[in-house]
Length: 464
Ligand SMILES: Cc1cc2nc3c(=O)[nH]c(=O)nc-3n(C[C@H](O)[C@H](O)[C@H](O)COP(=O)(O)OP(=O)(O)OC[C@H]3O[C@@H](n4cnc5c(N)ncnc54)[C@H](O)[C@@H]3O)c2cc1C
Image (cartoon, rainbow, N blue to C red):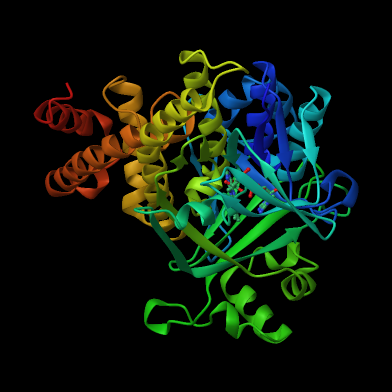
């Protein structure tokens, strides 16, 4: 039996290896870094991410869904902080539907442990420096030594700066684009109170929307919060950005900025200045490329579609890649003795059918940045959310909000959710315009007057 080689022991690589092992294959993972479980690669810091139904559905195949969800913290909505420190809750879905704040390290360790316990080999400090696609060899550097390893099947789960993708870029007719946001991000920290309690409400994802920039905070099980500031690198006073990240050099500049824009958070951040100085500023990239496959090799996860984090879907999408690839493996009846042509066919089907979903979530994530940093504070947006909740309740089956389709309906492909979202936004704009044009402002809460307008517009749009 020839092994299936994987590059990268991130969550996507580990889940793929676990599910391949379950099917009798022999996966071997080559991971550039030392074993982070021993080395404490996360430096004891709590770095979290939001996991939702697509990720959980994929993890269920490895039997990890319940365990990961039980240690995650449910966030049923946004907690939006205005400049005066007032906080408004906006539900993400209905009936307590929630996304979960999950430890990034904890999830990765759990997946590595499970992979190894099932017999998957993970070779740490084994960096892929090149992939020789024509001769089907991997070039691996381990402890200063470089060796060429032949492969039968190769999956590139090596993240946004994938070595396999670099090799694919050198092939004929490979489309590639990478674009950076003008914003960078910096992780900061809100510790528990002296009484050991959460310093803010833990039941939600906190957002301080400030137009062109924002800060968010997700709760951790140790009752701290991990905050992330998303801020342009450069000032743009005409658009309300009076200082860029690169201008925040001295402690006074940092403090002045935070006290002006995130006043209610400052007293909760005793290590703000230290964190700001010590924690790296990182950039935000979107990578689009095609084709993801080449013979018996394929990229998946961030290697194929690195996206900005504003829909909380990057990892969810990567884990979903694995679920969908395994469905195709099963449908094609691939087994450990299958030849390379059989694998190449499956990988081609995966790459061509899944690529439009990668493009759709990349665009949705970019669009959602504007929603998070700006629109959540806009009265029209808040009214739209109220109408959406009403429409979902009263006209169930005819209106499922875009956020719900993306986050809570894992069987709706991203590309379909994206298309639905475009149609729905046009319809919603018509409904709101008609409400504004025909009802007095005092009646915007009167659903007896609003329901008929919604019904007529749904009818006119053929959705009723
Ligand atoms: C600020 C921020 C917030 C985010 N928040 C969320 C969120 O809330 N929800 C969500 O779903 N997603 C979120 N994401 C996205 C998420 O982090 C990624 O989508 C996810 O980590 C991708 O998983 P992966 O396994 O594909 O890649 P990675 O996690 O990047 O893992 C790749 C692995 O490959 C290894 N590797 C790299 N190069 C080589 C090489 N040459 N040879 C061998 N090994 C190699 C790396 O060391 C790493 O272990 C966020 C991202 C950012 C930046």
